[in-house]
Amino acid sequence: MKILLYSMNFMPELTGIGKYSGEMAEWLAGQGHEVRVIAAPPSFPQWKVFEGHSAWAYRKSDINGITVWRAPTWVPARPRTLGRMAHLFSFMLSSMPLLLAQARWKPDLVFVVEPPLFCAPAVLFFSKLLGIKSWLHIQDYEVDAAFGLGWVRGAGVRRFALSLERWLLTRFNRVSTISGAMVEKARGKGIEEARLVLFPNWVDVSAIRPGAASAESPESTAVRGYRAELDIPADAVVVLYAGSLGSKQGIELLGEAAQQLAHARSIHFVICGNGPSRGPLMSACIRLRNVHFLDLQPAERLNELLGMADIHVLPQRADAADLVMPSKLAGMLASGKAVIVTANPGTELSRVMTDRGIVVAPGDATVLADAIEQLALSPSVREALGAAGRAFAESELDQHAILSRFEQEMFRCVAGTEAVAVTPSSLGAKG
Image 1: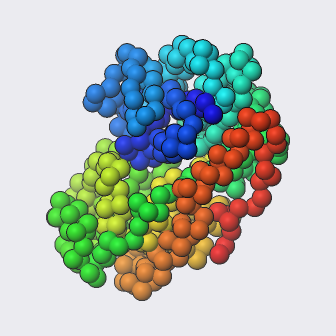
Image 2 (image 1 turned 30 degrees about the vertical axis):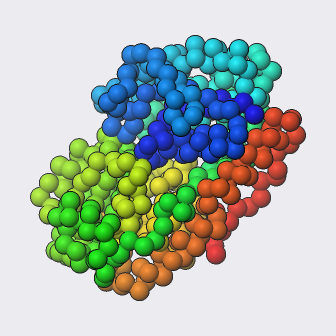
Image 3 (image 1 turned 90 degrees about the horizontal axis):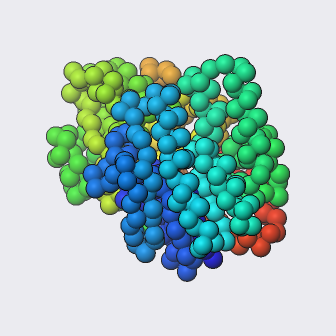
């Protein structure tokens, strides 16, 4: 099968959405499919084009046997609302010639990843023109998030944006998204059951695995490596956040919790990532000796990084609940370490973590700090929660199993048959 992957973020060497696109492309190529990719030059989450790439020129490269075209894309130094929109719009315009150039190749399927939804009209036009199948995969509901987080305001603008989104979504042959709650939202936007697919994020459970020592057994090479780099005592309890530092994360909560736990010298916070919230967070923590910052780490060190943690923390703003399912959660669970998330009762994130982690209210630094302190004092509880999270990752989030199901849905889509009915997923169930 010929598959054209249209994903603005394509960064197999890093983590996040770009890494998922890269892993999916490599897996499909490994199954014998011919895969081509159209993407922007990598710039996320630093909002700066990576060294070796260009923001102003078309580039073609080969990544593990996959042909990748990079379209020139304007990257704002400060990702505010208008800058973000101009960034997405510039990619939409510059990538259109690359998309139309694939007409001679004529793929069997065009798979586009949202965000950005801006690319949907061009993909629909291209697929209708050539009579090929189109698939939209939703990682974030960016329209809902833009209004929910206050990036865009106005009742009339909201109604227009949601109507346009609905019109676009209902014209794809398949629409997939990553969680049960997000599938329900897709139904509410008018997606027919026969075209709706649950396609959750995954984790390579053979690459991310338990084994790095905790604070009680600091002989582990992984722990010594990162702790030595950051000058963290070997017997300290490490609270780790690893991911993008953006506005949806509510990341400022970690700084507030760290301030409240400054007296607990055995608890150290490690914040690993880049993004627009990093500068303000570093300023807020400048006098805290128990807080350490790392840049986004390469994929080959991800297992080592996650294994350093005794406690993973996943903050999430309440107004972003069920609009996204954080991709970083899969790696946290697979690492076999305890996880604390901020989520309201009834959200899918809360349901996923029932009996597998600690759930506290979003936006409350005192409650988060108390949960961290209690868990730091309870190694047996950390061990039990870590084991439950690992078991869930092995049974529900395995990369090969998820991508194999996805491949079968691709065959059904290209053949013109209906999608397998989406059933209530264990991703949102207690167990």
